[in-house]
Image (tube, rainbow, N blue to C red; front, top):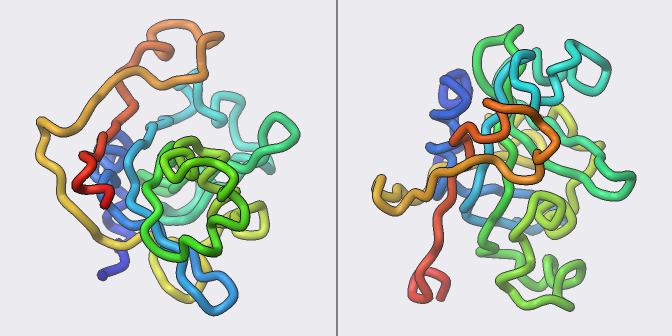
Length: 197
């Protein structure tokens, strides 16, 4: 597979969020590759987006969002979970795509060590679950997603037609005021049973 170039991430963040569906998340871990197809994303765009971490401006936590596109923004939340984002748009403008769901493809035995007590469908169906399954934490914050030199990157994958893409508001932001709460910035693919096999 071809690693996605930086130019891919330098686009408008909502376009990147849509285009990441079907792409392949890759984690190199202890000599093997853990991979999964990206099935759900959310876009977060700029300081004006009141659901975006950058709403408070540039801080040590959000600094990576203001940097070059194509880097990982991995943050800790609720005192217990890590979440993975891909930084997007032009340098200096804070935007990122949150990976919300991935379908595991390879490295299943390794992923099962952390997620095997649940059914396969529940291994990576949430942002914190992805990070647990792929053993991602703050050590990989700022990882360069555009090269295999780091332990984390995203490769080209499957193209889904527009009619397969479910678009709706982002989840988990009920306290955010309108219009930000209802913007259609969440993108989702639902695999068929045949595609899961």
